[in-house]
Image (tube, rainbow, N blue to C red; front, side, top):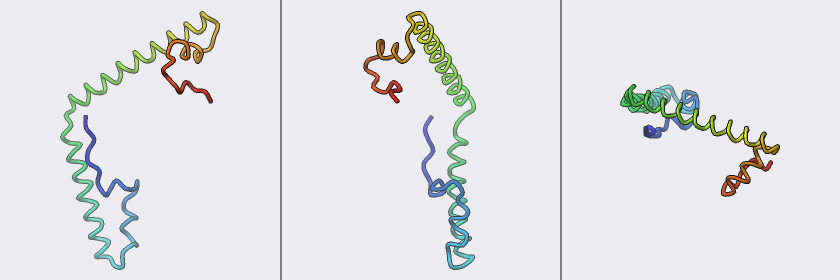
Length: 104
């Protein structure tokens, strides 16, 4: 699933205050707001192209990934308890290529 194109309306969380009061008159405010409305309509149209079936499929894959990851974490925790060490030590032993294992 690809991301929709960035628009000028995405530059801030609340786009309305960017227009109101920053221009010298109300007609400039209106022009600015219309431009932002067009950007938002384009963004909505991009999201409307995503089918519910593909979204459901994507969410199912995320759910499966999380279940597998949680099972792996549980196994590593169980192995650490059996060996009487921390999970951090198991990670260092089993996955030496991982540099950031929470050395804080």
